[in-house]
Amino acid sequence: MTQGIVPGNFVRHPDRPDWGLGQVQSVSAGRATVNFEHAGKRTIFMLSVALVAVSINEASQT
Image (cartoon, rainbow, N blue to C red; front, side, top):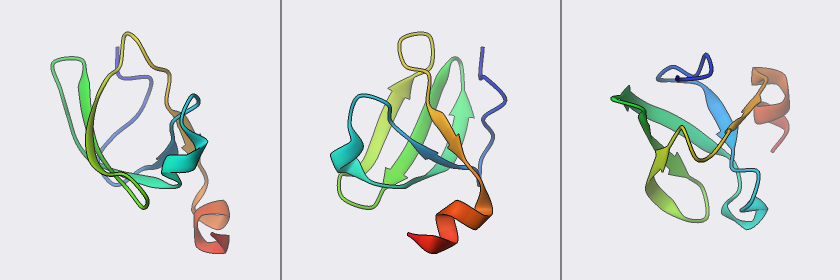
């Protein structure tokens, strides 16, 4: 259950907008490691949180 999220994707955490834009570093065993611009590197449990994918165009405007 990785929701189509792969390393290199840009995402946002739906419950933590203050973390800003994040880039997925790795996805393994239902977890994603994401480096957020205002919160640093975080491990996200994909079964609990549905990360919101951000298009490359939207990411470049941030």
